[in-house]
Length: 620
Image 1 (cartoon, rainbow, N blue to C red):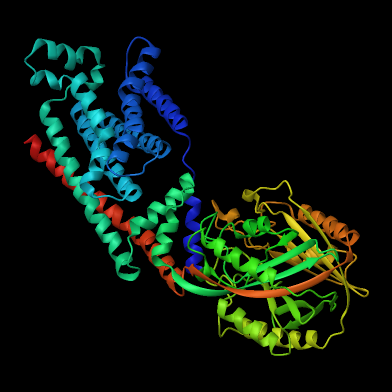
Image 2 (cartoon, helix red, strand yellow; image 1 turned 135 degrees about the vertical axis):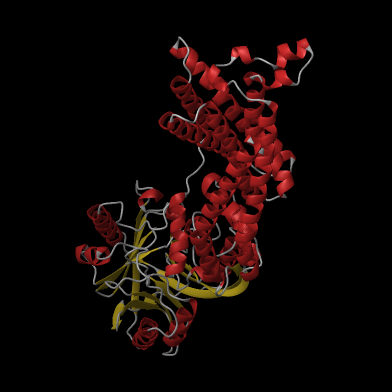
């Protein structure tokens, strides 16, 4: 990926999955109880805690329970988990406002209870504005409709204040209604002193904040609509929705900006003489991203599930422009792979593995009949994705020497993360692109003229105990060893997204019993749900990875037996992010983040200043 795309990907570190609603509610009630103990001054601590739960925690509980119900009936899609987390955050915001106000009032000596009451009104209006912003992003309906569920927590808190502060006694003449809706004697003194005019003032401030939210969203949204023709809120809703709840809303956004593309899908199948498949290499020229299971993020696992033998889904020469927009597009890829598989002509002869170095590029390949598998790497130099056009050119150059189909793999096995301006993306016209293209041409000519011999193959794989958070996907580590004559070539595939610098060389030095070996990663983006940078060897000790691979290579050697192999290629029509759309999306999103924070701070200062002015005028 480019540096701009890397900046966008790194935003995932700020996102976490919403906890279960009951966990958020329990935490909110605990915080409310502790706040009651600190704020109220009754004779008993438990009574203070209960008052905190009742006057602070109950509005939070009401908001957590009622907001999803109201939101759904307004056409939204807020889940109970998100609603409870939102209510908890708003409770913490309110407590922070009141704590700051209490400290200021205590220090100043001139500001008393009225100042704290005013700050409480500002806090209630602020959480209304915050909830309005979140609901507009998550549920995507008009601001007037969003204001209804957004006002639940503020309305619940204001309603309880009106009943228990004595404000309702000013407007209720009926004794029965006063007994029901005017209960100031049951509230702690800290909550008494509000009058009806305070709630009118609260409504005015809420209206002011709602207008500020609308203006802020319009200002943020304009660059998105002008450059991409879509709303920033659609992206925000999908991004947060997937990472917080695992929803597929982000795919709808990607569909709107996607473009159609034709991509080759190449399959190398290895079978025993009785026709039983032993191994299958599947290489569609798409990028398995953008993250998690969105789009093609889980492509390697889907490929493995569709194969009869041990599946090897390495990384193709394609960047984020060739991310599939929806997971359903993976079915199109798998259909093309199945068609290619059915058209394979098998042969029992192959060449030994040959390695060629060209500039920074190192290529390892061998022929199966007239077709070839070629693996390319820039290690020990750091690199990321190879551009689609560079890969196509390298394949064409390799075929010019007399080869048939070429399965060109980007080993994707050495990178130093997301730091710096150059993340190693190999683009057309770069020195590295010519190294790969020229190296593929030379290796293709070498393989076309190389001697053929009977082919033997052995495979081994381990699912491993490592999890995606440690940089290893569900396919674990897979090894295929091909033997022609006395020469053995090993291909190691780790289900991860790139590798720590130097790990590939350490593995190659440690592997025994073969003449040539190359280490690849699948570039699965399952490991990037929560971390944009989560490479093999970053969380797991390198020695453990090396030991597991050397054991698997030894097991694959023990599994060697005569086989037949063949290769075929098909083309698939899919919808991908598209040329330049990924960069435009990344640039726009990064600009929104960098400018949005400053713009938001300016809006907050402006509305706070106006709020102070309103209080001064109201006080007069």
